[in-house]
Image (cartoon, rainbow, N blue to C red; front, side, top):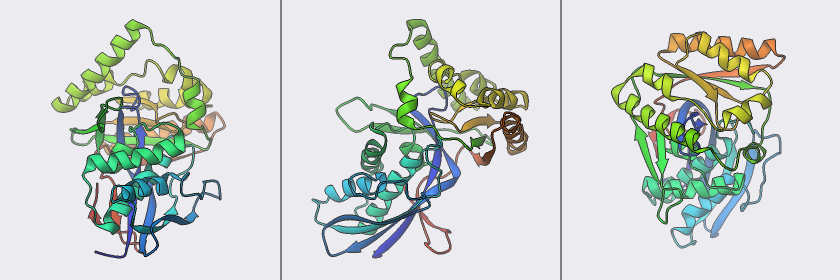
Length: 324
């Protein structure tokens, strides 16, 4: 067992339009890294944060990475000692699960360096505590895919026991195209504009779409995947706040995407595509549409079945073992 471990946790697309707070998928990159080092003094201390331009809290009880690591230590009775460093590879307020990736990396790094070998359900619960510290609520649509990889459905978040994270099958070739406008949207503000109630007919249609998506994934029915990914509640109020967002979503569909919508609360936008060649064409269309509206952007391509958190070599950045 090493005295120091570095863990990479990837970005994620939360909600995937049709599964508000319950569905998410991992991206290959970018992501966050947390290095955990064992020390004699009990407790968790966040020693350094890089890549955030000094914007994230350094207090152990406020940073999502250290809160998640502290939750792991608490499961050992609180006697272990850890020093953490966090390297932010994810932009803040981007809709790509930035705080979730930090929380997952913190939880997995603590677990690996202490040798606790917690079950995925326990690691998920620890990571959700980090997400709660950062966002005010312990939703799992970002932390679950960042931890486990792939496309994940989370149920039971309001139940008395731990939530259940279920990896869904991903059709061969399914690819995610992401455009990240150079804008920021805070999750708390974006949640505040959501409707407090949903009309019954819209709720029925939304739940039917989510069920249809699950069926489509098991059948590898890409046409049904595209028809099922419809955001009937969040997108209508969130997308208009993103300059060029509607144009980018429409451009993605016209360029051949199966579906396109907001990633989490935005401003990032995602599109699901049948293959990587289509995804390249789609992401060019999305970024061009944003540019025409005066918004510059970055972009990412990823398989929809990307791996989750894993131990990496701190200097080379190459994978050592796959965690989560």
